[in-house]
Structures are given as structure tokens and as C-alpha cells.
Image 1 (spheres, rainbow, N blue to C red):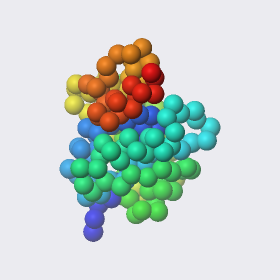
Image 2 (cartoon, rainbow, N blue to C red):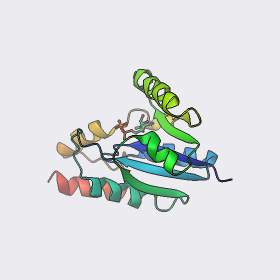
Image 3 (cartoon, rainbow, N blue to C red):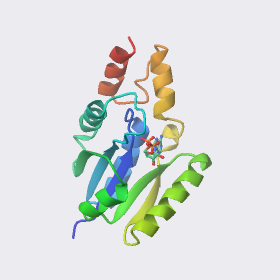
Length: 159
Ligand code: ADP
């Protein structure tokens, strides 16, 4: 049976850190659903369509990846695709509290789906979407942190 996992986030925008996590997760799971969160109470910089396009353009070549948007509980999406795991990326100790809380909550909601934590390569540790947007807003070159297509779109967006 195929091992399916789900990796969710805002991906506002997707970064090389996210992509590194996706590639590592694909070594373990046969299929990975990359879920672009669409949370009505959260304010995103890029629209759902833009965030989906960023992910599709960046992950298309990897194989075994499905990119979707989802509104609602992630665990419900995971159940609907018979996933056995939720993948989360860990950067620093500061991520731990929140991630531990979410993993425990999801375990309560569905004890058969495990949360797997993956760390990105050290060169990606400090990459996060918020900082990259701040750089782009101030006309810095962000191509070392995000895929080319995303860097170009951000340049246009903040022009
Ligand atoms: P959110 O913060 O809304 O959960 P993100 O898109 O920022 O969504 O993150 C999605 C997942 O990717 C989270 O598990 C996060 O810890 C992880 N992640 C983000 N950036 C990195 C990075 N540079 N290295 C490792 N994991 C990362």
C-alpha cells in the first residue's frame, strides 16, 4: 500500500526551506499532499491562487506531489486522502511549543495519523516567508531564498 503524507502551511510564499522539507519527506513517503492553507481568519499577502501557483511551479518536477488548497481542519483532509502522517518542518527551538501542541491535538483527533518532524538543511534554518517578504519589500534580491518564479513574482508585486 502506498504511504501517503500531508504537508501543510501558508506557503505565503513557498521558500527553499519548504521545498527542502518536501524533498526529504518524499524519500520516506510515496505520495505527499502539499496543502496550501486557506484560513478565512488569517490575512495572507498572496492570494490562494498565487500561493497555489507558487507551489505548483516549484514542486512540479519532484513527482509524487499533489498541491491543493484546503479550508478547515487539516486532519479531516488527511483522513480524506488516507494519509498515514502529517509532516511538519522544524527550524529552531522556538517552533517546538506550537508544533508540540498541534501534534498532540491532532493525535487526539485521529490517533492513527502520526506527526513526523523533519529538519531542513542548516542553510535553510533562518528562512521564513515573513522575513523574505520584508526583504523583497525593501527591494533586496530574494533569489537565494525562494524559487526563481517566486522571486520574479515578488519583485513585480513590490514594485
Ligand atoms: P504556517 O506558519 O502557517 O504553519 P508555513 O508555511 O510558515 O506555515 O510553514 C509550514 C511548515 O513548514 C511548518 O511546519 C514550518 O515549521 C515549516 N517550515 C517553514 N520554513 C521552514 C524552514 N526554513 N525550514 C524548515 N521548516 C520550515
